[in-house]
Amino acid sequence: MKIGLYLRPNFKSMSEVLSTLIDFLLSKNQEVIIPDYVQKDILNKDFPISFYSLDKMSEEVDAMFSVGGDGTFLGAARLMARTSKPVLGIHLGGMGFLADVSMDNYKEKLRAFFDRDYEIEERDVLSAEVKYEERSSSYFAFNDFVIDKGRLVMTMIKIKTFVDDDYFNTYRADGLIVSTPTGSTAYSLSAGGPIVCPHLNVITISPICPHSLSARPVVISADQKIRIDCYGFKNGVSLIVDGREYVPLHTASQVEIQKANFTLRIVRFRGDSFFQTLRTKMNWGRDIRGN
Image (cartoon, rainbow, N blue to C red):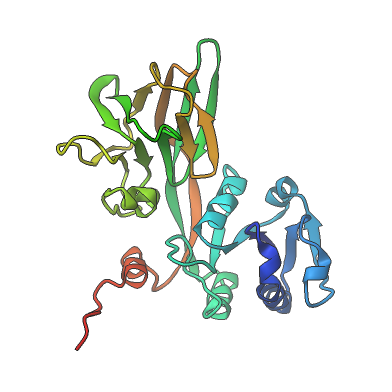
């Protein structure tokens, strides 16, 4: 099997981890492919591995292993989008909800993967079409799309929002988060949005610091379409895609967001569950009070 290792940008600080993983994969007779921006001299050994550009990696590998935190995982997911090939996360970060494998249990988990003792969990993806007067641009997100006011520090923005062409609300707020169930434990959670089980067919709309006590997060069907009018947006207001890409909106006419026609395929192992992850990452069920 051809295994790709997708690395976070500051990979130079993780040469020991990378060498350990490569050593293990080669011992299991796997072919290892890593990005060509990784220099051989950061590795502890002269491994018999292949170096490819990221685009070429997505074509060549049978599965992609993300090595890092949730941000790294999202980068791997974007790279592997539409390929139908699985993404497995090896978590090295802090909170992290997308990866169940760590450097403490990687041998056990990866053995199970090569023995095909795992399941593929399909997660919804959102697509957004930003429309201008004579053109449009398309984007997709695994966590969320965020309408962000940018550097307009002293003022709120008005976000006129429709659901299925039915006028819904005009949020007066610092921004608006449109999230997948996967993204419900990301920025949406910080903004007071609900935690949503990843298998549900829904989209969450969460205002950021709304200037109204009645403005609350809302959950709609993922079969519905959200439209946001951009008329009146000032220079600095952007659509942020998974926290990685900024799309200026002051010259746009509207943004349409809906469920994409493809899914993210995540590797899950027996015994792992969404609720177990919540308990582990958020310390639920533990008595943290002193004696």
